[in-house]
Image (cartoon, rainbow, N blue to C red; front, side):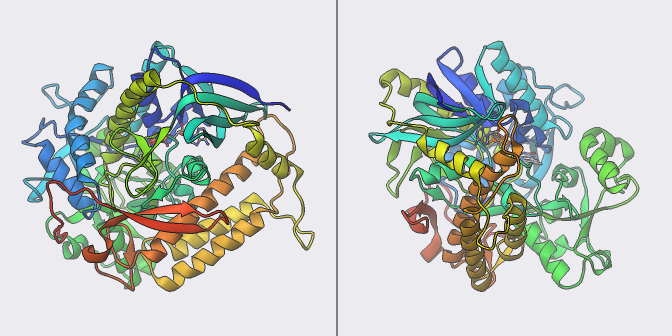
Length: 582
Ligand SMILES: Cc1cc2nc3c(=O)[nH]c(=O)nc-3n(C[C@H](O)[C@H](O)[C@H](O)COP(=O)(O)OP(=O)(O)OC[C@H]3O[C@@H](n4cnc5c(N)ncnc54)[C@H](O)[C@@H]3O)c2cc1C
């Protein structure tokens, strides 16, 4: 089937918070948004706890404190020029959302209500501060609905359920993308002056994860295959409180409202690990503490979980401020959190790494931050880097909106100054061959069928065992082998559904390739980085090593499909690295 050709000045890939914010900034211009999901099903809609901004509605607060907390939380790997923008522009961003009609929870006198969150403090670490602006525990849902309504109001053009498979680069400039229409299996070439990737994270490389099924790292992998490096992929955040065995998130807001973590001996164990911030220490620290407790046999009944206890809070606080998670716990565990503690374990949550960009969302491709003209990225898929080695809660919603908007603004300039680049000849060829191969399928060497589910399950389980909260050389080296083998076996994957209409079998097969690429870069970065920093914790190198490792990693794809690592410096402006105590 021949591909259909389209032309737009800007193509935004992704209809989550980052993509919609960029599209809104470009409203009234020649822009199309492509999304594999219907936009309001994007993962942004599941964000619970809130969006951080130093509004100071409940108590004194300043953007400088927010900046400091973010830099310290990042274990000093974040680029401080970018963090300064994040903390400053957070304030106007939240007010803009309010003006667009977002129904924030309120204080009795009508201001936007704010609650404490992990790692957010007053006076540079003295005590927790109330900085997270929230709409009960449905903040992301409200943000996504508000942005989508604004997009509809401004008649933004959407191509929903279009799966982007390839990035087109011609004469050193990005020239568009190739996408599969999931509805009818047709291929589409979008010729553009500029492309923005806002495709979200890759949490599905792990078995226990808070991430939705669609978070398969597509944008990261597509960019990587096109020659763009991926930055800091070894840093993957585990959120301390996923529902035991299921990984479904229980927001940090539950601890912000006063929830406590308790081990099998009835102890509030965070007193040992973070005496000042306790259960509101940053996530990397709490997740490690839980693992250490479990290893010592201090899980509940010796099992692989601890308790998140809300039973000392009033029914009103639990049901009014945390209605959705109360519902989850009642539905999935048959437990009433008003009366019983919740079994939790760390769950894979957030990719700190991604496509490297500058503070305008422009993708940069080497140690000297050389821009690839016409390519932009924002949101979880990107690495600007404001989260460094560990992200603070509430800072992703800020990141996607602040940098989604900045990318939109720079795109306005870029498309005014540039013409359409030429399209490569037979632009759809790569995507066409890939899809055709999967459709044709062939059996493995022993005549055995290799299925997507089998390979994906192995990947997710092994990543959990060998490359999650604690890591060491032996396990990572084994994981490298596993990914290599799975990539070999991927060549033999067959799909059962040969149809064209809503072929989810085909979609999952395509997504599996993206997952494998992401896992490969995570493992390569983790194996090389011989230190412990933020979410990357090497048992064989337990200390942070600023002398040798205060630098970002850049993973490139070699022609034979291996990873080559290079490094680039961290931007340090106001805060020199210190020991990280909480
Ligand atoms: C359960 C949960 C709770 C969270 N709570 C909070 C919180 O309280 N505060 C906070 O700051 N952060 C929170 N986070 C993190 C935060 O929500 C996400 O990092 C952020 O929303 C990501 O936004 P995004 O726009 O980058 O991507 P997403 O919202 O994930 O959107 C990605 C978009 O890309 C599209 N896409 C992907 N691949 C393709 C492709 N190949 N072709 C076409 N389209 C594609 C999808 O259709 C989707 O529209 C939470 C995350 C989770 C999982």
